Image (cartoon, rainbow, N blue to C red; front, side):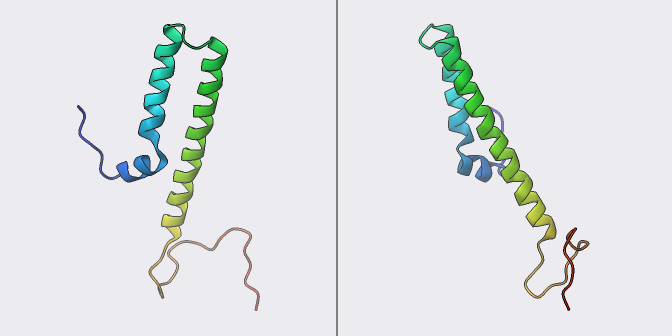
Length: 88
């Protein structure tokens, strides 16, 4: 068994990725065993693809927010947001 990645594990656990992967594996076994149709397998795969796309967007958003995060009362580390103007 591969060593557990404790850095990314909480995110994967929170998003239920382990269960999704197990479900996809079971879907493949069911398809090979004739328990589900190819159309049903494709529908399940498309749903999983959308879920993984959502996970990708979530992780990108977290990375973006963490990159701009500053301590309370701290100065901004990065350039100002594009399209945001100061209103004096």
